[in-house]
Amino acid sequence: MQMSPAPQIELFLLSCNTHSPEHTDAEKTKQQRWREETLLVEIHQLVQKRDFLVEDAEVERRREQEEDKEMAEFLRQKLSGIQRAPKPRTSEAPANKPSLSRSSAALIKDCCGATQCTVM
Image 1 (cartoon, helix red, strand yellow):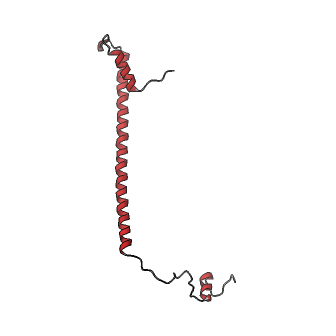
Image 2 (cartoon, one colour; image 1 turned 180 degrees about the horizontal axis):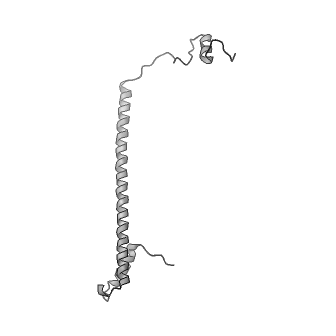
Image 3 (cartoon, helix red, strand yellow; image 1 turned 90 degrees about the vertical axis):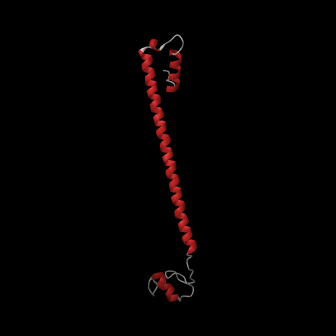
């Protein structure tokens, strides 16, 4: 079983066979005319699909560019906010973490939640 070539090639070959000096449009058979029309419709559909895919890719590219711009602006604002207002550094350890200056009873209380340690 022979596979059909691409519609454009088939249409070209068909028109070469039917548009030679010895053939006129009047001499084309109904089957040849029908095949030419079918191929033209098929080519038209392929072109429409291609156009749709190209347009879809372009819309996606524009959307990604817009997202990139929005993300860059968001990061720029966040970084400028961090640079303008640096966090004040404290020398104290957070309340939930024991410091070295606390007493042993305070350490046990932080560890077990009571002054009597159940682990010991």
